[in-house]
Length: 117
Image 1 (spheres, one colour):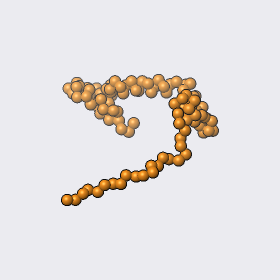
Image 2 (cartoon, helix red, strand yellow):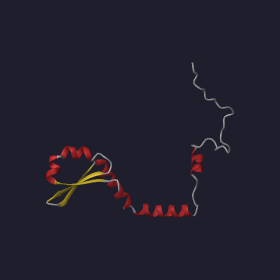
Image 3 (cartoon, rainbow, N blue to C red):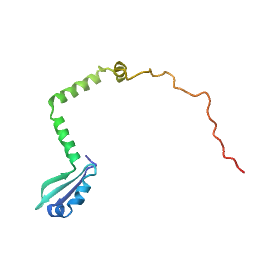
Image 4 (tube, rainbow, N blue to C red):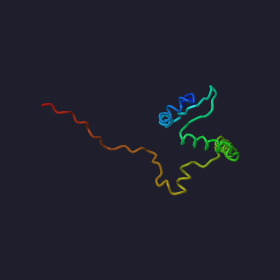
C-alpha cells in the first residue's frame, strides 16, 4: 500500500514511547518496525490490521477460490452470467420494473425573490 505509514525506531525508543505508539498504530495502515542493533526485529500494528493481514493470507492460499475467480472472469468475458436484476427479481427483492421514461413533474415551484421594503 502506498498510503501505509511505516516508522522504523530502535527498541529503546519504542520502550520509552510505548503508549504513544499504541495510539499512533490505530490509524489505518500505520505500523512500526522495531530494530535492535540496527536490524529489524519486530513489527507493531493494530489488532484489526493484523487480523486483516491474516484473512488476506488465508484467502490467497485457497486454491479453489483462485480457480473459481478465474472461471468467473472467463464467464464474464464471454457474457455468460445472470444479470443482478434477474436474480433480485427471482428472489423477490425487485418489485417494480424500471420505467422507460424518467418522472418529470408537471409544474415547477417558482423561486421567490426577497421582498424589499
